[in-house]
Length: 421
Image (cartoon, rainbow, N blue to C red; front, side):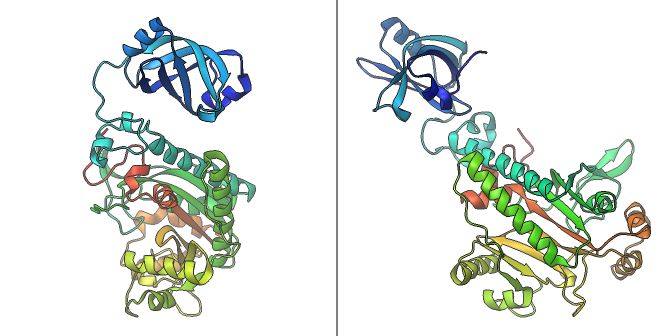
């Protein structure tokens, strides 16, 4: 279709053009009517003063799809200083039933469950659509940042034979008569691929069958994973992640036109034991609770002017078996989390890289070697010191936009209760 998008109308002043999109709103005044057409780039205002065209407009409802041919006319009082005049309207698809909620208001008035039940409509709202644009820009920035740092994008299986990747519950399925599982992460595969490309990343879905019914958990989410070889320790991984976040934020600002916080060239970092003290938690606490994360976020902003803070050295007993211990004190790990505005959005660290260390670690965990055979082959044949991280995309976007519930920035969320639409 030969059409002009709303964002490009200013380049066609005094020309006759065709715009096409959805009827976002109709304003039927006594002497004139206004038609607001929504397309992928924004809104166009159409002035209707011809009686026949007005009668046609009165017979159309919001969300009907139309093509409008009109003249681009300057008007300082109009949005963006232009409007479309002398229109002819062609209906492409008409809506004949009542909408469950209105899309032209600044905020959706419907409850979140109602929005999710009618996702095909709710996602058209500018606010919901904007969050998905931010997610797309974040993903593009992630890819650009890692590509410029010599990472290679990979794709790994999402159906796996063993439920061994983490302590979270898994989704079992029947795989041609034998058991299989949806992958909880690409962790094992991306480590194996370090032995191929040295630096790899993946953007893909992961599945967690955790019975967590909270505003920050999903059963399926998008993970931005990276793994890199030939490191000294986890601090090399943190430096690369910091650079990656800087590019992601710049890409979001440029592509989604959304203001993002500054990423410090060196994000403040605190050891887990110190983090407990700052958060006012007991010294023997094995992990950080949400309240502790919020306290650390407030501390980082107050003391360092940073929306970000690394927490390093989590206890080994709370980290997966493949995590490298701190050589100076093996009760602590060379693992880290990154908190953004008081919420954990990244988990990462240095991994074990010697075969014998894996045999010992699995033995301590009481795990047999057989289910890990394909994974362990990579270390049997030589692997460099390496580490990596994983960013939860929806949680990151939710925190960036200040959204209360991660489902509001997810197109079709899957959680404890929802598997439709």
